[in-house]
Length: 445
Ligand SMILES: C[S@@+](CC[C@H](N)C(=O)[O-])C[C@H]1O[C@@H](n2cnc3c(N)ncnc32)[C@H](O)[C@@H]1O
Ligand code: SF4
Ligand code: SF4
Figure 1 (cartoon, rainbow, N blue to C red):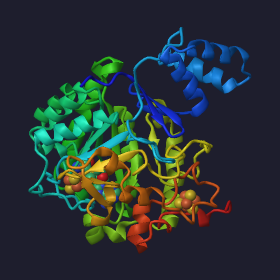
Figure 2 (spheres, helix red, strand yellow):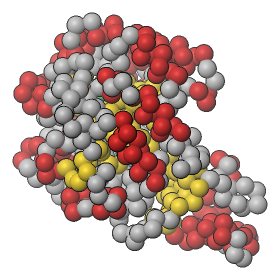
Figure 3 (cartoon, rainbow, N blue to C red):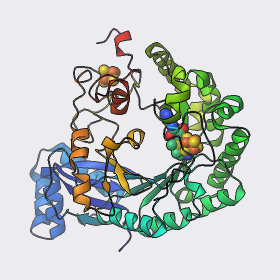
């Protein structure tokens, strides 16, 4: 099987997607433009068609798209498409893309830590964990269906001795590879990380020393900081193409909230982005940390604080991003609201853009629900991928109507709506409200 090139053109129910591996971006393209572009590639009189269309059409969008495609190198000056073109060998279904763009491969439930908040209550490896060969088989299936992004997670993926063999295989197949890790290890693994070709790393930092260690255990702060410094040094040494895109996950509750500014500034110093994750009531959080979850009032004031910190000179000068995907209602970004499902920001992407694979090979729709039998589907190694991706379990998750969000002015713009896992955890109804939503505290509604 050949390696995926930088550009992948994938036919979809609304036209197609251009996936640009270098930018880690999927651009939906509408049917009329897609047809023109595909006509060009087929070498029918298509080439003329696009040139003619550009000459005669008053459609400024088409001009913009074509010049953008040429600028990024996806289309050459003679209008030839660059990269791989793919149309699935099975029928397309409305409102569902033909295959995921991201696969979250949970390679283990085992872990070297026992965090207070762990959504999977991780620690022990399951007996029927996929072996190296089976994981490589999974990766081949994903490449076959043109899923370009592999996100390796767990548990703690670095406890598996074959981790770098698996990432190597995915890189050989041209996939974009991201690793979720707690960063708590020594130089041996750190060195392997920087030589592995992994494109991006997300590491957990849940506070400054006292709070991080309260959650994650003794000496974990110094340890993860060691990994952060190691990656930051690597990134300063190498050329842009060889840098590892590094982000810190800050999983916040009441007890570590006050550390956020310190964490953001620490990350700014090392040129690392920060992604904000609110505590969700699964795994050990449900047992130990329910009282640490914020009220809507606290969530609102934290969101305001995030806006202030984003404008802080140290943060601005560092160029890092502070990502707050949940209820970013004060964001000045107006959002876009005309994109086809699942690009329309109507949900976090679980089941729409992405799929999860449990350590035993069975698929899950959403990481937070990965251990709840009704959200777990067939084994990816045992069923045809088409059946897995279009299965009833996936379909019913995708088609949940967020009743409270539909009339909300922020929906699909600054907010992708209630988290279905949160709504499910609260009352077993995925279409209900998210306890963190604070829109009722604003006047705008
Ligand atoms: C499950 S961990 C796996 C990767 C790695 N072991 C780590 O801790 O970073 C992935 C991310 O989920 C976050 N997480 C775990 N339990 C959570 C919960 N109950 N609510 C929100 N985020 C949680 C972790 O803090 C971590 O950033
Ligand atoms: S959150 Fe990550 S590091 Fe902590 S116990 Fe869970 S899997 Fe392990
Ligand atoms: S009602 Fe829904 S869309 Fe509006 S802010 Fe709350 S969660 Fe977000």
